[in-house]
Length: 144
Image (cartoon, rainbow, N blue to C red; front, side, top):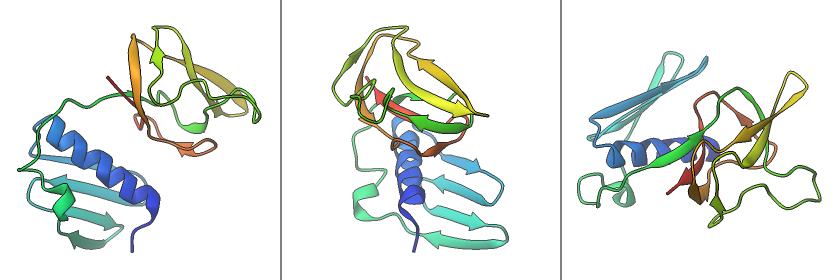
């Protein structure tokens, strides 16, 4: 059984395939490789490969194609969605963000880096949890 983070990553990749009309997409790190195409989903860990058929809710051909815009992580680190544990989040679902607004913090090598929006947008989905490790290029917020 796949863990929740891998399932979220797979769902995000499936959405990117649909939204950008791609034939396939591949994501790798040191231990795992996820490759998804319109016909099947393949998840490999080291030398082992497991084929997973897309479920009915992930039927790529019958769903309407929408554009998927996101704000991605510019670095590897730990993401913080609030300035302090007791504070409200920098950005939440449905909030309108202006270019230059701080949307989160990423801690890398004991340094907190403010991540600012590069455009005016509205947050559709927060794709990460507070205190979660993030990778370079990982989608943090789905925007419109």
